[in-house]
Length: 412
Ligand SMILES: Cc1cc2nc3c(=O)[nH]c(=O)nc-3n(C[C@H](O)[C@H](O)[C@H](O)COP(=O)(O)OP(=O)(O)OC[C@H]3O[C@@H](n4cnc5c(N)ncnc54)[C@H](O)[C@@H]3O)c2cc1C
Image (cartoon, rainbow, N blue to C red; front, side, top):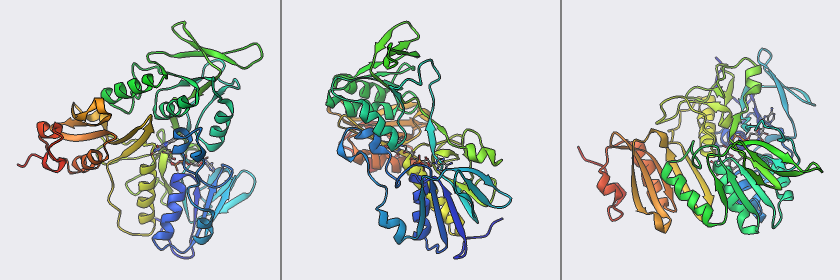
């Protein structure tokens, strides 16, 4: 087993996104003095992904994760535009596409995820795009102007955020979702219904239970529309495919590391090779409150794993873990979610849905397992604590906005 790091060690991090940058930063915060090499295959400096969808047409969509001085000040050897193509575990080095090999004592895989492809005829047409990177966002921005008809395939968070971001700019957006409701995989029926109404009220088309059969070209090869399996057709100039993400675990699989739709990591975020760690979207792990190992796609999860991995690399105590949480902004709705909605067996509403300020608490065996808050940060914060404490709660008091949430626990 590899020992803790020291000032003569070299840590190589593959993937310069939210997880990779967090590992590099936390290593220095925790006092590690050795070498850090951060390799990212995207051009330019690491940036925030959430604004790509939330403020797609705004000025603030491209926001660097850190100022350039951060990497020099922290002695982080950031190498952008470098793609790692292989790992030699026996000799402890990685191979890059154009720059030879780089040796490591400790390797961190933070390769993230990639867009799930939609394998139907016409998906390679010019007007059919995805949104994962800043380059994708630039491409999509270049295709949109007032009057453009945009079809968003997939009613997940990214799709909803894009439709919400472009609608005020005169773009006619229609969301096409295969399931019978939006956000079917990640949100409760109540939240889905609330957000669907908000989107419709903003002039965004929503078609659930609709599956794409093909993207139809015009004679000049541009996109003409989207053909649905039920025979209907939606006219479109641009189509954004946002049907989820796949773990980018190919490097790990090729290197013989245990993977199962994501690199499998233990509670310390370590793979089955003691010198290799993995964090972020690329991993599958056990988390607080889940009934099986899960693959979380969120920044809080990636940065939490970064802290866990760094502590273990340096031989420090494992930091406390959080209930998984996520946020989204769309159409003036500040959404904050924590826990696992699908585990809930009943729902208690706190607040008035008509005012767009409420929280949905999902309970199992009388205990809160998830909270979904709309413009209600205080309920969300208290809800997270109640999930963590796993105490039985009084449903009536929980629903009563006059009762503070600190007073809803049932005392034995
Ligand atoms: C449009 C959009 C909006 C989002 N909004 C939110 C939000 O509001 N809240 C939230 O919590 N999460 C949000 N997410 C999800 C969040 O961005 C991810 O969960 C987070 O970025 C995961 O961090 P990561 O480090 O695992 O992966 P990433 O940040 O994706 O970074 C992985 C990096 O590794 C690079 N890479 C991959 N393979 C290689 C290789 N072989 N060699 C070199 N580099 C490689 C990739 O190009 C990428 O730059 C959003 C995602 C998208 C796409």
